[in-house]
Length: 541
Image (cartoon, rainbow, N blue to C red; front, side):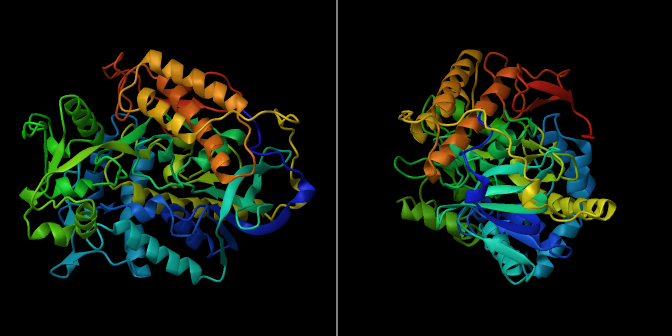
């Protein structure tokens, strides 16, 4: 694997300096930037326009124990149960205990969540023992949260947001400390360097690894790949969550059908019109991995549909206006007929390894949100915990940056501090580019590293991805750069999946279909360290 995504020379780059550099503009990135701006000058780099992230597309809501009949301890237990034994207890405790304060802060910022009789309205989602999921505008929760955070960030003088900035690589000094990032300005096509006391990765997930995904086009694993190239440890990359219910119409994108739809009473039916989840604990509201595999198996026999009508014809358009209208746009009136659904890649539980303060294995580098893995989601994320994750750990990251700056008396790094590490593999003059398309990788991942996996397919995927990656050297064109990052991420996912010889949460091996009760370990991998290794489930020191 190459050290740098593209070859570059220091003298070719424009250089900027900031106190804290945040990479990404979803909930994790913008909330971190807002908290950091209380102490530092902050620069936010975002790949496209500031609203474009997985946060904007989140429908169901944000899980938080704010109801009188709920408690952080119940939320803690539900998260551990869904995580199938791989949750880090310290991280989960931080999530559920800090969560209420962070959400209340979000409300003070101006986020408008749905209410009933003047009180916050909560809905039920899979594997939750209580109705604890807040929602906004029915089924547009992420959009409301993103709107709120964007308004706050753009109104803060100490935050500079720069759009159309593609993260190429992280920069280090001779001590191995991360001191900034190299980006490609998509408007000018120039290379730019941003130096900072602390760098926060909040670049989101990698759903575009798969041909069927609920994720937007920007979710290409750029931050995870850049961290891997820089030498950061990745953790639990085998755990990709496939959402059970995405719109399944030929020619249409896999539009997400929120879990809240099933939480309000919608039923899954097989080709014979039978509720095939009836005998499963939790039924349609079993953990996501269980429901996704249930649908996958039924699809081998015929079409699987979601029946909205048990919710009530008067309630559906009011409670799920976006989903209702989108289905109408594709010719299906869910008040009168059943909706074809199928699983799709949705969320990465693994990512850049961090502790409960967001610290990675590289000094001065932090990670938050979907690109990070602190063990809070374990092997299977509890529904609607992702938005809360970005708030809670974004806040904790800033606390650690402040404490570190006070202890070390940190100042902004200078251009002379950049360590010009030699790339392992630079393009050769006249080297022929292999004709690789993103679709080839996506189809390979879906077939061999998707919902159901086994040894032969995983080995085939690893061999092919490795050969593609070694021969593919991208030009400074965004689709090529994204594909290179997807190759890196896909390779790491497949290697971790091959190493885990059991089935747990979002990782299912047909050749090892049982969970290994004694194998409570995280998978760890880093560039240049050879095989995937493991560490016990425990606090990350």
